[in-house]
Length: 465
Ligand code: ADQ
Image (cartoon, rainbow, N blue to C red; front, side, top):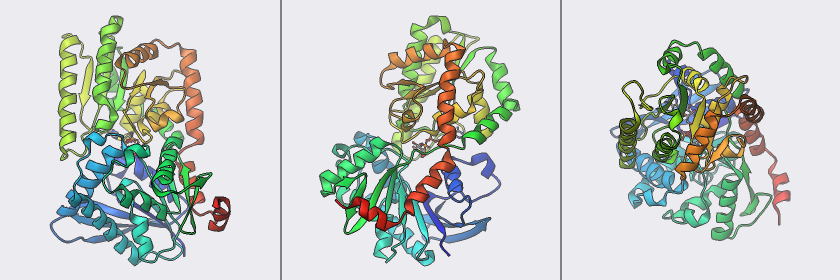
């Protein structure tokens, strides 16, 4: 029987810690499996000396199939090519890319290994949904093994313009291989447009309504902004207000207004620029000194990569410097913590914050922005300050949209947010919440899978030029 096969770099196999964790991808994949059964396939997260052990575990309607990676594969495929080449370039940071031929070989080797293992379990009618930049050439590898299934791909991170994409060494090997998918999904129209321009410029492929004819098949490009479980997150935030940890934080603020930032510690999130903006705010809005606390939650990620260690050191130093310059014995302007919190605690803290400060330099979507909006009390909501370079800015038009590279304008937005009248806060919040409730994570998964299963004949007719 036809089943859904989801493939992603990491697989969230259910365990005791699952309810604490439940990150973005896990919520998204669970939405895809609502009313469907199948396989979730990917890396176990374990690194082994030599062998790759495959493990299977069934739970409810999902069979989890995971592979361990050898040390070499992990170094070359994951830390190397995926996170030190594709991640920076796709986030418009060509300057940070560290390319090596060896890492590219490791990346292709692991994708081929994934395809070999999938080949053993894939039925002819199965629908395959591949996630993210770690697995761009997977459809090509599956086609080479004879699979004619519907295969879709969703890129969670941005797609830069071809002028930048072509800086990726061997881009001609990798980017056009996306054409082996039936459907390639992006977070925003800009990302889809950039990819289409690449195909036109580098491959001479033209489209009608984002349908491309490639070797007699139709490949379709679509825009699917990823959502959250909006209503469930709003309920969680309401219930979490009373959590002991959230109460303790509120008591410790002693009536001061809370500004919150929540980001994986990553250079794309723009935390150094954000600290500079907060410093500019303290400088220019002296009436707020002593009356506001900025809580930055930033769990460390990819710590073994040098660029990440550098950014962690830089942020710690900047927070310390600003606290030293502006703090008083009884007031610390910035609270900076490198730890992960449960979703319930995060939801409660978002709700307690008068301002959500989400200023990535570049972000595919940014779910923190959406979670912050969902968590607010509709009668007395906080204000979202959002980078114009986050995918979420396309839907959250009523946020205070800012250029994260301009500290003075972000500082002015912080002042505006803290002083915003209740009626305006309510109106902005309602407009954004309504959009996020309509376009939640379930709608996202259903729409992608419906598009993926659309009849190829129909697409063929539409796509013929
Ligand atoms: P990320 O880069 O990880 O995701 P984001 O979309 O903000 O960025 O998602 C982060 C998730 O981790 C959120 O759900 C957030 O609540 C959670 N999180 C962050 N800090 C946490 C902490 N201290 N404790 C617990 N949870 C924490 C990638 C892309 C994004 C895209 C998503 C989904 O980079 O652009 O929005 O995938 O497609």
